[in-house]
Length: 159
Ligand code: PNS
Image (cartoon, helix red, strand yellow):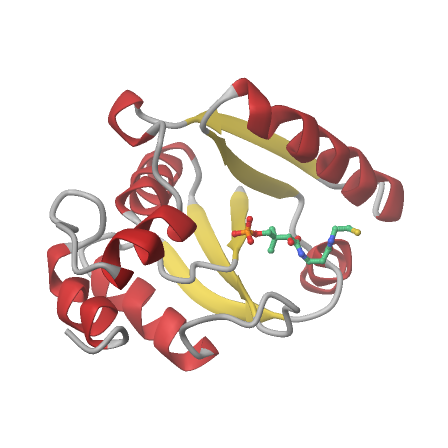
C-alpha cells in the first residue's frame, strides 16, 4: 500500500490545496494530510480550526486522513514509516524553495521521496495569504476556498 503525505499549514486551506489532495488521492492508496502545529507563522486559525476546515472540505474523499505534526517533517515521516511527500507547485518561483526542502528532507531521512504535482491552471495565483488578504477587505472568496468555509474565514475578519 502506497501512502503519500501532503504537509502544510493550511491557514486556511484553499481550493488549490483541495485540488492537490483530490488528485493525489487518485494516485495513491492513501493520502495523509499533515497539518503543521508548532509553526512560527502565528496562524490566523487554530490548529483545531485548520483540521476541521480540511475535514469539512474533504468529506467526499474516502482514502484520506487528516492529522497533525510538529517539529521536522522528516521525523514525522520516519516515525510513521511514510515514504512519499506530495507538494503542489504553482510556479517556477515555488520550485527553488521546494527543491531545497525536498533535498533537506532526504538528507534528514534517506528513505523519503518528494513528488511534485503541478497545480491546476486556475489556481496558479492562489495561496492562503492571498485568501486572507481578500477576506480582510471583505472581497469575494467564491471559487478560491470551499464554499462552506467562507463564513468562518470572513467571520475572522468581523464580516
Ligand atoms: O503550507 P506551508 O506553510 O507552505 O507548509 C510548509 C511545511 C509545513 C510543509 C514546511 O514548513 C515544513 O515541512 N515544516 C516542518 C519543519 C521542517 O521539516 N522543515 C524543513 C526542514 S528544515
